Image 1 (cartoon, one colour):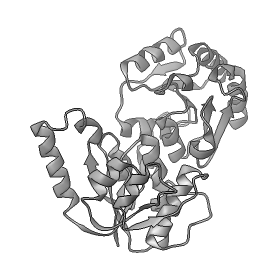
Image 2 (cartoon, rainbow, N blue to C red; image 1 turned 90 degrees about the horizontal axis):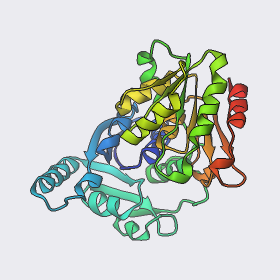
Image 3 (tube, rainbow, N blue to C red; image 1 turned 90 degrees about the vertical axis):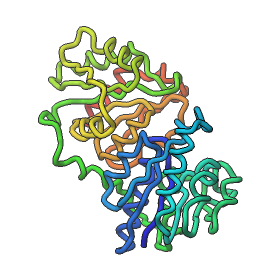
Length: 320
């Protein structure tokens, strides 16, 4: 059985799909997957043992200049690759008009997706041959697991889902694995940020433990924040700009991670690393850390400003 998965973005959503693939591979002995995913996240599906072919798509980049000749050529090449195979099942785990209209509509095979009551953008369900009802008040990972089980006709597993990608990094762990913490300080929305003052206070409290702290970043303004956080501390390293594969390798070797609500926090969960995620306005019940050793500190006032370094340090001490 060959199945096409359509889950293009974001990083967290892509990672949330992995346990469903593990379920299917465990329940169906002959299943293999191809996966359509945004080019920036194309490394993620390749880490899973059940994925055969990754088909990158660039909708985010294409829409900036949709009708330019080079973009039209890229879209044509993408559709050609998409239509090379006839699939036994095509599962739209994205549930958006863009995924249904631009990808599902073009692919060859029986198309599965959420029904109008279950999906974020109901018009997308028009493009599916078989529609499935999945309760909305479930963690995002469990919703995808149920969608795969219904689409591929096996019982939904009741045990906690397995991302099955941590093993991919076992042979490439850093030489100092287990000797450092990672602080994931960068996120896209202002209300999800934790103050630099509290980050530096936590860094100060970690210093006597002898553990090193590594600070990753993606954009230039995040690099500048990391430099400010590290200033004056010898036990803090601002990492260079890394590929997604490289940052995953660094996370896989961490003793523990402290994070704000960000895609790399979900990557930490997928890599089975102990992680404390800080939540202000965001409700973690439906999209929070899922898996082994995932912990949350939730502000009762729904504000990151009310979470203190002492709270996080105490939780981290208990965890370690």
